Image 1 (cartoon, one colour):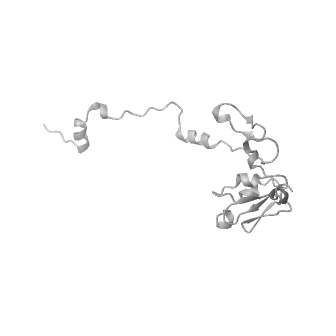
Image 2: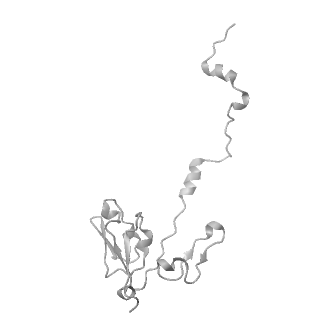
Image 3: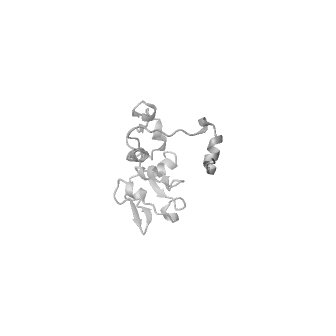
Length: 158
């Protein structure tokens, strides 16, 4: 009596029993779709201006909770000095190099400081307060903004 075997069943006869993969057991209620949906639901913190007060230091990932930066340290080196302005770098701005981007004008807290005309942003230096939010939120690989210091700072405080 001969039984007709398929190729798969023929090779299964030679395979040791421990080589067969065990069925994957998942916890009840587990869903990859729900897992990734929960991960994507986290909201980014709103951008904060660089100048006023001491900056917050994000230490929640190491279990310390939010803390204040020690005086004179942290992001104070990045703060725009009083009277400083921002200037757009044409070679680094995504909107000026052909991509669609209006992040700086959307996030600027001063209405009219960054105007977008025909998809191209422009900084109105008369309205700009120098808060630095646009510098912090610019998504370009090379930041699209330069910090312009007041003349007294450039001359050494004279």
